[in-house]
Picture (spheres, rainbow, N blue to C red):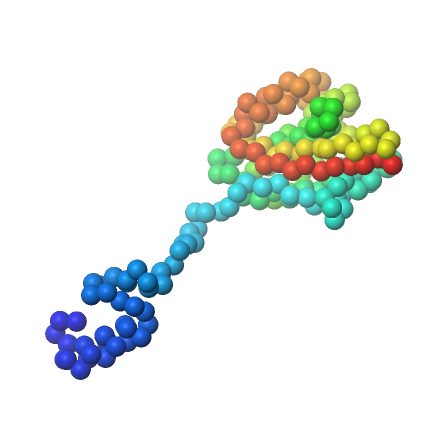
Length: 194
């Protein structure tokens, strides 16, 4: 405030004291309000996989996405904040209770924000599962029981070779997905068969 008339200095000082408690230094005193968080464009948020079509309000699979419906559609899923440097995405679905691989989807474009129910994005392909098919096989626990199914989205640092297809053993495909992955996001959805 050097060079200002005494009246201007007094007005400025009064204004500072009215706004916040100030010390004799140029910075705010410990009691002054300062922002505790800052928003930056670099923070996109966590890599996530969330439910889309084919799940009820509790988060469980609807019967349309299971062996209880002859259509046995694959579910819709949403992706967010795919990590920078992702060459492509891979998706898996494993029954956590009996450790069976129900679904392996490869070649999902890194720019994708999700997939619609019963739909393959251009460039994506399905690999052999533990039921001997290169497709989605929905939840199918024994009658009267509940199984949990983990869907995992993997960000791969390099694409999966086209050799991984409808003839590659599913455990080998899953192992190679995990080897190439540098990030993953997962959700678990139950299904009770009546």
